[in-house]
Image (cartoon, rainbow, N blue to C red; front, side, top):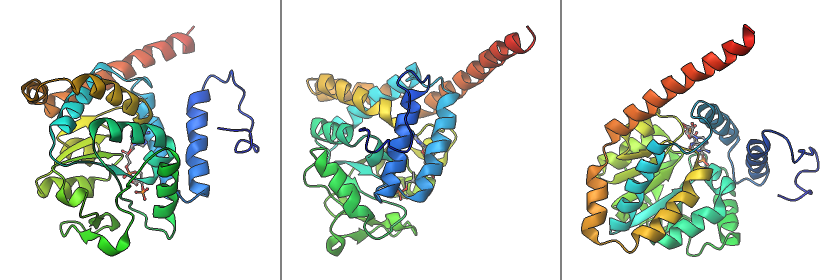
Length: 267
Ligand code: PTJ
């Protein structure tokens, strides 16, 4: 992020929350360039809040889910990665790298269909090296009848024919609709209690900015695995247990933070 974009606020390099501030800035810039919807700022703030109670790190339960997610993507006949404004603004390069590694096209699928947004996201992904981005040609889009929101318009070469859909930062309605269509759904959501987290087959409770590079690293390893090995990884994953582990972690983490805070308050 150059100085030009940062000209109205100088973030000191030694600021204790520099990473968080820089990603906030990406979201704000994204909103100015139409990539991010106004509501995307609120969604990002909600994500930050959940990240805080997860210790702002990729926990073991997330790694476990990531392993299953990558194996599932590599096993798929027609995998697809659904991209919205927030994800595009936060990590365009990582999306392109993962897409190339697991052979899953990127499909732009947005909730807030403001004029110019799809093109702005497409441009950003192409600048990051993306090619053949789906969801960009209005004239060929088809509808998912199960869904009433703008997300119902999907690409006939992408989500429509997919068997496995990777949906980072998704709203619950679409997750439910995709499940009803018989798709296998992989989500990344910092909120373990969101409808998406609960409905998905594999829920990665982690920040997308940390998740994508780890997924690529694991995909490079798993690409050499036999189908049976990948299937075993998927079969051994249990999403109910996963959500349970996340919630147990959050309870423990908050109790620990409470103790720490009180040791200062009552010093
Ligand atoms: O670009 P559009 O028009 O498709 O709109 C995108 C948003 C994100 C605005 C839209 O999908 C939306 O309103 O989503 P929700 O219903 O707010 O859900 C977003 C979920 O993502 C919430 O559960 C957040 O906690 C979570 N979230 C936010 N930031 C991150 C995140 N999860 C992982 N990593 C993040 N960085």
